[in-house]
Image 1 (cartoon, helix red, strand yellow):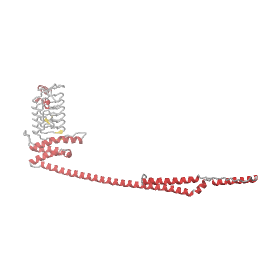
Image 2 (cartoon, rainbow, N blue to C red):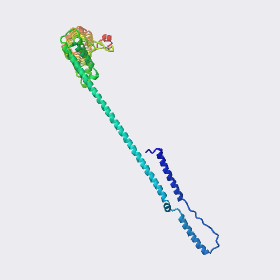
Image 3 (tube, helix red, strand yellow):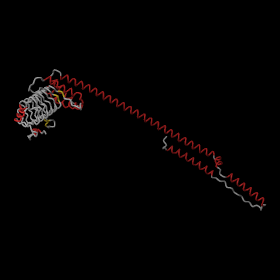
Image 4 (cartoon, rainbow, N blue to C red):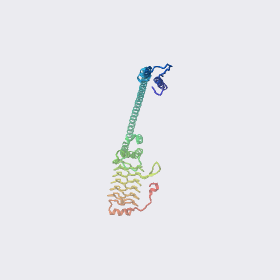
Length: 409
């Protein structure tokens, strides 16, 4: 029962009022004093002895009456026992009633709290079951979507291996749709598929442009490299593995602006390939990059490698016959044993490059080629390079920066 309700307050005040009325009645009875009236009668003059005796007797009777009429506590309690019992019973009943009401209110609140707790527990269980069911449905959907994606990927691979050229081209193009953050598990497979298919298709060197299938595979190869490289960076933070593209044939391929950093390409065939600057989707000029790549024994003869980055790469035994290496960056690169016959090395940066067993003196031009601290050259080779315009001093004299024509800084 709520102690703040009007019924409860009325019961409390009624009980208190009755108790106060009974107390006032008792106090009035306790304070009542019976007056003693001393009657005086006209008497004749008594005998002095008799008068003294009567006076003494009268004083004793007055004292007796005063004692009988004085308010004694025991007498008062005896005469008002019933009233006190009624008051005590009323107080006891009131206290008992209040305690019972308090207990009932506490029980009611406890029951209400239990019901609310049970309701919340049930609601929580229902919500948890709903979330579990939803999570299970989402997991099932993901698994089903993964199965469908896997089936689609396998069908695409089967189409790439079919004997129908149109089907192969469609499959190669379709594989590019798997280069998406939702399909990271396919990145490495797509790169390996592109390299393997290119090895199988083109075996004989030819300056002829690639056919439709080769072009689709080259595009797939170019677009898959940054995805695989970023994935390998995330998985191998301590050391970055090289992407294996050894002996991949890319004859006459258009690789302008490609970034082949950290690609392992020993024996790669890049004759007549185009790897110079190009415009990106923002219409900015970008250069191709082979920085830290492995191009040992790669054939880049007659390739357009203008302004390509070869810094810190390995080109041991590579063929650069007739290649356009104008403005190429070979800083600290290993180009020992390379064939540079009739190549264009104008404005090339060959500082600290290893040119052991290479023949830079056989280049068509070395105009403004910076060869400071280049190693592996004999005195005769150095003199021949100087005669073709090479610079061996630390400070390279200012020369026109052809990259400025393309907006490259």
